[in-house]
Length: 51
Figure (cartoon, one colour):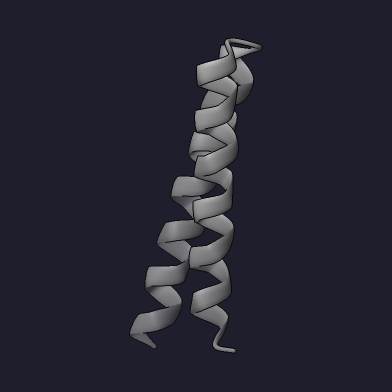
């Protein structure tokens, strides 16, 4: 499996956890952290794909 696909998968999982945190209303600051991590992983996946 290519490295960039793993980064994309990780980013999507971070977004899923963030959405669940926002919907359940547990802790919005934690959801923002998960959103930032998801965005970072999507950027890493894109940069790895370009190589």
